Amino acid sequence: MHDRLRMFQALQCFWINLYKLSRSVESKKRVLEDVVMV
Image (tube, rainbow, N blue to C red; front, side, top):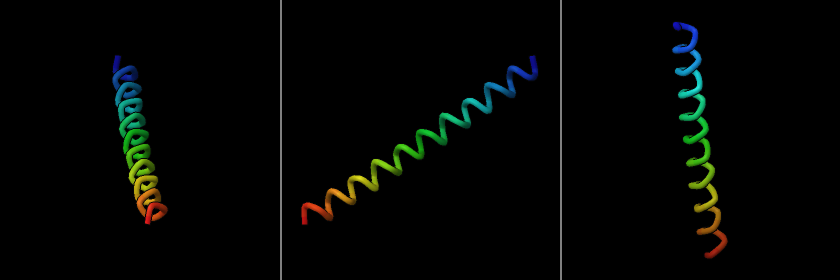
């Protein structure tokens, strides 16, 4: 039971990091697009 909880927490942490990474990539793309437009 405890192992399952730890596994769930690890998975949750992984998804949060993935989400943050994708958000930062999107913001960088947006900045790049703004630079290209100018």
